[in-house]
Image 1 (cartoon, rainbow, N blue to C red):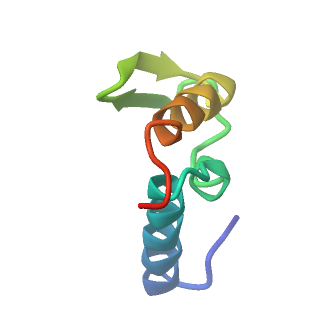
Image 2 (tube, rainbow, N blue to C red; image 1 turned 60 degrees about the horizontal axis):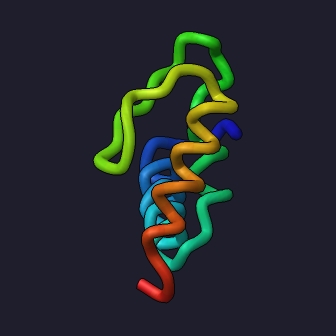
Length: 68
């Protein structure tokens, strides 16, 4: 995903974060790099590396939320 400008990217990211709080991780997962060295640290687990592991971690984090 390549946004038209920074303001659009920020707005899209904020919407994706709201989706996570509603239990839907997919829009946020799409923001993460597909590079093998991409890393995510979150409060519900250890740091993870690589897009597949990031997708799993974001999905697990989203499972802590439902309807905001």
